[in-house]
Image 1 (cartoon, one colour):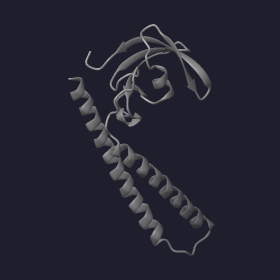
Image 2 (cartoon, rainbow, N blue to C red):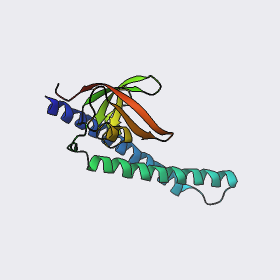
Image 3 (tube, rainbow, N blue to C red):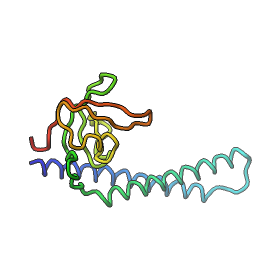
Image 4 (cartoon, rainbow, N blue to C red):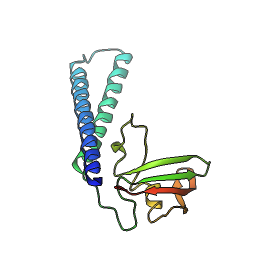
Length: 160
């Protein structure tokens, strides 16, 4: 059953990514066409608009490449020895006292924006720090603000 749930989540994620990719490509085509139709004569405001559209196209190209790469490697990696498997749920108490239940995912895009669930990716600093941890363990992980501690309150493996 856990494999079925995991495969369904992967299929939903792949579908969301493919829809996003189609939207990004359509937006890029429209911007490129609009940019190509512009008259080369204009004032500074027109030039600023052209530069902004060019920046938008660059951003779109980067996001298209990122989403296409995610789709291309959309299989779930086998967890490394001691790592939490894809689909595990872990309840943590952070330094500030906040308690959160997070789902372990291969890529962040697996969690829908409207899902409301928190997630931790397998290869994130927190995901790597949780490797081999058990309920009651306090683990340290690196954040942009420096080291932080988190206590493992509960751990549920897929299929439990």
